Amino acid sequence: MYFFRPRAMSLFIASLNSGSNGNCYYVGNQDDAVLIDGGISCREIEKRMKRLGLSIKNVRAVFVSHEHGDHIHGISTLARKHRLQIYLAEGTLQNGNLKINEDRVFTLRAHEPFCFGGLKVTAFPKFHDALDPHSFIVSSDTVNVGIFTDIGIACENVVRYFKQCHAAFLEANYDETMLENGGYPRALKNRISSDRGHLSNKQAMQLFITHRPSFMTHLFLSHLSKHNNTPKIVKDMFYPVAGNTQIIIASRDKESKLYHIRHATTHSLIAEKPDLEMQQLSLF
Image (cartoon, rainbow, N blue to C red):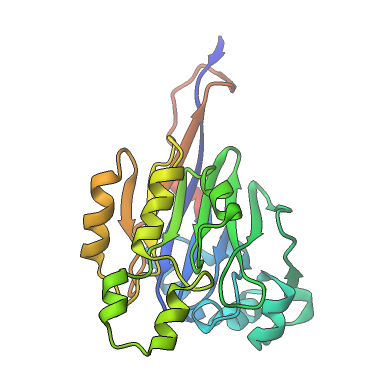
């Protein structure tokens, strides 16, 4: 006997580190995974993935957002040790001083997806003070996870892709009052708050409130400044407006939990049998 039943579509995601001391995000399905940025050491990436029960053998590629050190620190070692494919813009390669064999380097094409088994990764340009910065959306079937960090403003590209996300890593870098009253030089304050700097808590919340899709289940507030923000400030701002979206504060010191992002559709014809939960062990 056959009938229509929702078919689980899902991604597993985690922040391995998020902040000016290093950024790295994991997104994968049962069989394939990618890393977005590699701003901590290869050794730390391996250790943190292992603590989450994840194997780097499942990682097919690393996508690099831009050439700043907190996004590329471990890239060369990852490429050499694990023979991972590294996807980045030409400007990022030129400015990043990365030591990667040519056969490991692949050039990003904006808005054109790259596929790895059941994963699809799409890069898009953003505003940041780097030569050719990009952000990413990772998809598996109909589930979309966006990585929106190191952006000065929520431009048209950011809004367009944010509206598609079941989960997102969204920058909430600084509290405007803390930045203004803090000890940074004026030039640095201006750089951070410019259209090519970072998103403030207020800007991130405005994007979330205005453009959050009804199906967004998880929001990782990411890249919090050590000196110009606190987790408490961010929680106090976002929790009251979160609705059905779970808010997670990405740590600048350790990995997050591994989260299972799901989406069910009623269009899959399957045999009548016990509904088996997706086996997380198949990731490893």
